[in-house]
Amino acid sequence: MTINQITEQEPFTTADGSTIRSILDRTNAPVENQSLAEATLPPAGATERHFHNKSEELYFILEGSGRMEIDGDMREVGPGDAILIAPGAWHQIIAGESNLRFLCCCAPPYSHEDTFFA
Image (cartoon, rainbow, N blue to C red; front, side, top):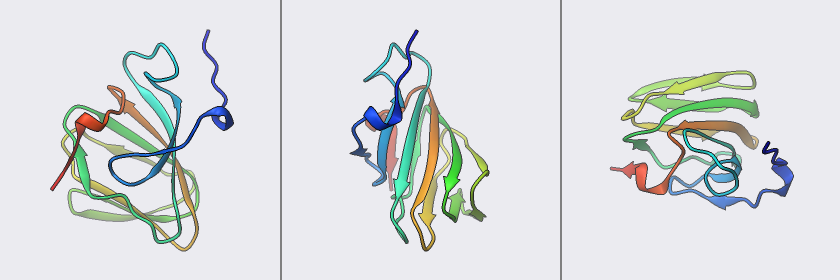
C-alpha cells in the first residue's frame, strides 16, 4: 500500500510554468498509468499555452477562480469544476485575483518530455 501526504511532497516548477507538488507519480510511488499532482498559480499567473501528445489530463479546481482555454474555447472556472483536456489539445489556465489551486491528473503520467509549446 502506498499513501503519500501532500505536505511532505517538495514543490517544483513544471515546463508550463505552474508550481506542482506530485502527490502520486513515478518519482514517489510505484505508479505506472497515471499521476496526481496539486498545481498552484499566483494571482494573475498563467501556465504557458501547451499540449501533451500522449497524456489525457483532468483538472479539478480546489480554490480560487480563473479562466481555462482549450483549443481556443475560453471558460470561467472555480471551485468544484472538473475539466477534461484531451491529448493533443492546446491549453492554458489563467488565475484570477487570488491564488488558483487545482488537482491535475494525467494518464499516462505527466512528463516534461510530453509537454510541447508553440
